Image (cartoon, rainbow, N blue to C red):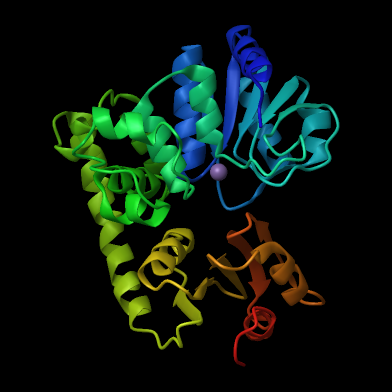
Length: 344
Ligand SMILES: [Mn+2]
């Protein structure tokens, strides 16, 4: 876990920064963490790190342009050592992915103490900021996690969460789950679109502005969500018709402008329980994929399935992602099927 002392320490690091720069992951957990911490700090710039799990040296350009006095990295599974060495200012890293070895960063990760506490980044950002409950809730449920403050949330917003339940139920069958999926949709699109959506989201004080389209920012967000959701629904309906034997489901779709693999695999896992789910987005010569399973610890399986193949992957126990060459994708799927103890 991250101790109370560390929470206070993080707060001080935020308060004593004049020009904080936040790099964050492109999902609701990453985005909500950023919004909570930025609102707490009352200043700062945010840069969304898309399409790579590791914050690399290509982002130093942003550091040189924005000239921060401290860098905060939120919900990214990795940072390149060269990025830290060349950033020129202190790097503070808040994350909950398997802990990595890194030098020179001020590293906050609940897994560092050897426990299996992998509560989401937005959970810790909420503890640090004591900010909006709804934003913390949307971030946590986006990462398939129901925090202990869900009960408070349900009391405050009964329409958005009539009762506390399983993560899948909350994410796909309640209002706050929809709110989280709306926030997720804002990160799909071109860089310009994404930053316009984020700045609209920064104006929101209460969820009803979005859910009931009560303010211009809320209407803007809903309009964007509906556009993304149209593409998503089409893919979901197709995936649900895919033959599956109750154990293993593979669904691939051609490169669209937006990646929806993470969201699709989550919903398929919920709608078709018991399956190991692989969703792949076919690019020119590679496949970007998501793997989900409620009953398997995925990272070791995935590591073995990728051995000798041209690809990489990793993530959480029950949710992983990665990329593999188009040529090797069928091999990887075949091995996953075998390794997961399923019929081949
Ligand atoms: Mn996360």
